[in-house]
Image 1 (spheres, rainbow, N blue to C red):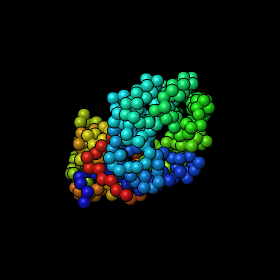
Image 2 (cartoon, rainbow, N blue to C red; image 1 turned 60 degrees about the vertical axis):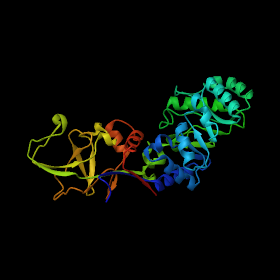
Image 3 (cartoon, helix red, strand yellow; image 1 turned 90 degrees about the horizontal axis):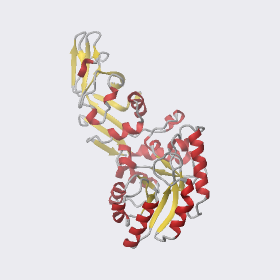
Image 4 (cartoon, rainbow, N blue to C red; image 1 turned 45 degrees about the vertical axis):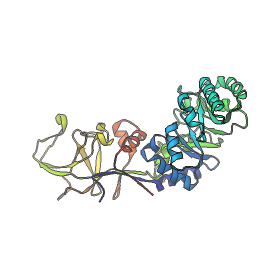
Amino acid sequence: MFPQSELVIETGKLVHNWKFFRRFQPNSQIVPVLKSDAYGHGLPQAALALEKAGADPLAVFNLGEAEVLRQSGLRASIWVLEGILPCDLAAAAHLQITMACWSFEQAEALAACARREKCHCKIHLKIDTGMSRLGFLPGQIPEILNVLQSVPELELTGCFSHLAVSAEAQHPLTLQQLQNFRQAVSLLPDSCSERHLCATNGILNQLAPELPFARLGIGLYGYSDEPGFASQLQPAMTFRSRILSVKELPEGSLVSYSGLYQLPEAGRLAVIPVGYADGYPRLLSNRVEVLIRGKRVPVRGRICMGMLMADAASLPDLQPGEEVVLLGRQGDECISAAELADKAGTIAHEILCNLGKHPNRRIGD
């Protein structure tokens, strides 16, 4: 029997999804993006499963994540997409990673650190094509190239950017970003060969299939904004619990904080030991369903810190200890992170990252 509540991660499904995208865009290397603890799926376990399947390179967000992977025995190349703060450069210098470089000041700090540590640093130029976050503007490319030519300690091996509206292939900003990136790439030397722009939706929309690399984020975990591909991806996360109590109540009973829901007739509630402290959004109060005995039953009233109530009037002889699925499949029914995100007014990424912090997380094949 599993604990009272449990998050289950199946790394085999991550591998399945990665292989699907490899087949979909065979002329590009598909780089799994494992930032934020692999979107809550377990950074080292996900990385090692993907490396075993042949994934190389892998991408993370920051130095801490790269250190975790090296300490876990990962031998594949690592791209650090956020870059490295100057205070962390010495620790990063000998990890054999490729670092994002997004400003002149950062390039100078990288060069100074490489000289002190007597090592070379591989870098990818981050280009701001329209997100207005990190990166060199296309017009700054000639200037940064002049700087790098005088710094032999820095090896420019790639460049990248990020699309703001990749789910809309013909959006004016998407078209402008594609043009800006291609303009920037035309100014770079052939040795800057690790060029990447598209993430999941960009890959599925075939926005820049000529590029040799593409970054796989949310699609790796089984989700995409492109509904036509949903059946071909396998969500890797399941969140389940057990009924704590079954409570018979009279007509008119008010449920949970603020009395937001009133029973229209005598009914039965299943009390489930899951709440917003488990990463299950409070915004789902009165808006979502859970699965019990393979049936959808609605959540009633305000979701609490560690409990929620589900309407179990349609389930006779319900007993404490019966399984409840809050994310994933039970029988023929399935609740996805995309469904929860839509009802909470957010995105699947946030649902997965928050649930991934659950203390009872079991990761297997």
